[in-house]
Length: 222
Length: 292
Image 1 (cartoon, helix red, strand yellow):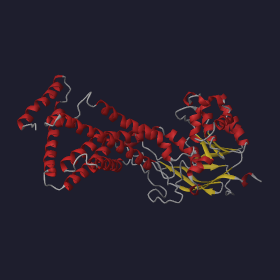
Image 2 (tube, rainbow over the protein chains, first blue to last red):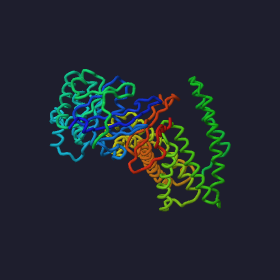
Image 3 (cartoon, rainbow over the protein chains, first blue to last red):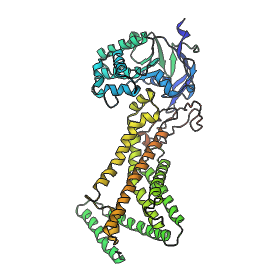
Image 4 (cartoon, one colour):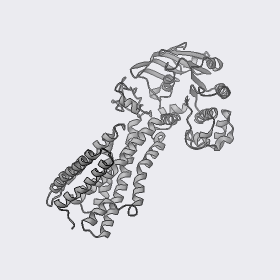
């Protein structure tokens, strides 16, 4: 089966305006489900907007976005967001302990499930009782990743998750993400760091001036 | 009944002179404002007095009093809108919240015969209900809007985890309601110890028995508590409905700088509504539902 046989997202003539500016300009492209797809491009190119379209934190002004063959408008946004998790550029800790943070994603999760989520992102399960806001930047970003993993997503959207991290925590985050991809989770990683793109990507597409280049344009086959 | 003569009123203007004198002595430059404020208050009160005499005079239909209450609710809503222009949709929400508070409080007080339903009771009770819940209403609306705008990252992180918008907004709604209700709770606690409230003071001055004045005041305090709680919760829940789209996205909330910039018009993309139609927000290029 070729890579194109399983597409995660398909964009069809997707256009987004912001403050009168065309942030995304009639993008028609598909993103494969397998491995890590990096979308790179300069700041302000519309990378974050592209990512936010994928879990409907935003919707396009024109065109359609499909996920595994279904138009997003046909899917319940709450269900979609649990299938397609997102880690933001700025890690956000909710009030309370790490366990409290993970429980926001899955209030009925057992302690064992929460411990497993932390282990998946190379965090010590002993951190569960620690106040989330006292974590270091790298730990906090991995906690956010763990919080997203608690919903058992099929796909992860990563919006420059390591842009504020030093080299060592950045490397840990990259290794963790590669392991998640190896377990079959689709990863779409937005970054403006070409070196990072080269390290983590199975494929890289460029987003410039509202146009996505390098991506296949085949239709999604569910 | 204790009365104040017109001469007595003129004499009391000496007190305004005292305030103006302090301003002149300390070179505050507020003399003109003090005099204007006093004159305006007097004129407004006299006008209201004349109007109230007409509305609640014996034999007059109670519908005139209800009309007065309705006008009061409408005017209070415009005042709220003017005082907090940064809170989107406040005019309609304030009107709904004051109306809800009126139903609850007037329903209890008149429906359960705490007071007899007459123009003489209806108008002042409704006035106290609206006047005393105004500040809390504005605080709740303002605080919630600020929280959702300033903590957008947090809110969207919750939405991205699959939380419905109502649930994602809950911590910020609670913070806004606490901020709005706490001053009224503190005031209620301090009543009688730190200060003697207006209704009670007025009744005692007018010659009522102190115990009767206390009972009326207690009812008024409870009225204000209920009104404040009702208006703030209606404002908060109403705002949540307006600030999130039906498909659980947070609308753009203008910052104070945006509001000053007439070119800072933001676009909110159309909403996706599985199985639901929302004509006001469908179609490309719709303006943000939040007014600049």
